[in-house]
Image (tube, rainbow, N blue to C red; front, side):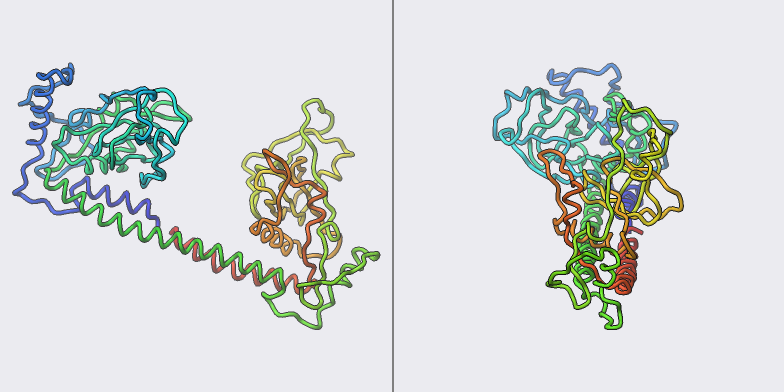
Length: 467
């Protein structure tokens, strides 16, 4: 279930007057516009706000020829600027804010749900510059990257980033209803059309104020808000259930791998050739030791016993000799898959190709970033690699998929690390010494088949959650 789409469908029904029934006894929304104009006039006379050049007389009722969709009788189309004080926020220097005051930043707001992730005071942050002041009940609207849908009604007063615009509706309308309109696809689509900036698009104050708002009678606004909250509460429960199930699936996969590499996922077959015979063919001089916690027929090895491994070529701007060839970087490698949408090129000399070329069946392991991230190259063509990728090639007859799952298990249990202060790295020496099991060859196959069978079922469950 796509709960994000479900929330938007509920908002769409709400702002079209289809979520709750209309009541012919409700005071029409046109009266609300008259009240807002009267309140503006009062504030202008008291010198609290300035008259806008576009301010209409109190008796004027706006009429729009081209409206986004039809609304029920008793509703009106208006604009955000007509019904709110958007753009008239109070600016305060950080130095003038009390240390215990709430400071709200964009990263404190969860995208789409607009839930507050963290609630920090000034003394808990390192700040400078200017902040907008807001009151309890104000609408807080993020004008930066509006598609993140960070719009909410303030639970308390405080100060916010200038990328957030606090405003109200003169005490006449339901701010909660207006907040829901701003979070609907109707308003989001408008902001995406007129926002400016490529990487960090913003909505200008002028464009925000021109945004069209479908306005129901006040009593219906309140009924709509109650109904939305009821549905959203139910969706929250569904999402929590999905999160719990995702967590269970992840834990189950981890347990499957745990059983697999300890010889407990499939039964042993006494007719299988013991792993020591396989290892003797790989390395006749190998001296076995106690297999410890592994089953009879298994043997304890280190990765360097059973895999050849090396890294690729470092990109060096001064080295321009050789033929340009495609090569993989760590940004192309994910857990058991590759993103080949952007493949770079650099020159390789003939004497570098043997060391740097990947062929079908090689296991690639990332040295940095998500240390140990691994994938098997299963394509029918060869490609080169950079120096931050380890190429593992089996020394004998091994099921490489089994060792992909071993590395994945070790990574999940923090047994593949890296050295360094900033960016951690997995050196060839460390990789060589990683301990792992060597089961009989036929049992490797049975284990991989069982893992893939069970993982397929779990993947289907997760896919069903997102359908």
